[in-house]
Image (cartoon, rainbow, N blue to C red; front, side, top):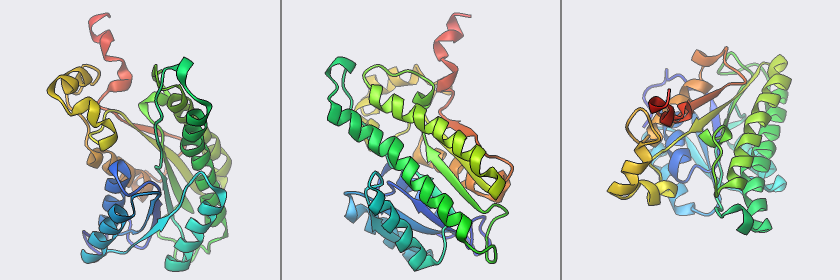
Length: 271
């Protein structure tokens, strides 16, 4: 699980929200493999979170699990307090937790609107604010990176591409994109980097109804110029680079991990 003591993230502590499944799980696994101590945040999937932590520690890495609803301010405060209490500092935040509550716009309930905005946007705000506060009070001694801390938020290709039937999700992700850029602008003077990754079609459980059949996969790939569905490891590799010193001059940027989906592939035939 841990490549070697000279890994690109060795000595760092990373919080990964929503890390018990999907992209977050693979990101946590990758960061641990690169040497970071990882805090696996989860909301409901305790067994899956503990299984991942056990696999990381069995491989010589360091990991703990912390249950928290990132849309709850007290829970976020406790998440960071438990991290600092265990590992002494926080160097990386991956604000990955999110949800979907899909419906045609005219049928969307206020409760479903609030739940997605609360988790996918307000949760990012709360976690980023807690991370910036922590980064600014930490001693420079022992800092594992050139930066004072690195934040990577999860948006989506739908921070750019409208998505009928998903108004709450698209609004949250586009809001999170501008939040990332605004925070990056504000905290750069403190040596803090803030970026985002925006996945396209990734093979996770939440997308299984789309890619789980041959017909569905074929239709999906019509929107992906590169011709294949993405894997969680594709995203994890991009995130690992973004938080490393190799990306030290990158802040306020979004990395689209989408096989070209944001290039609007229909225009290949309508130029």
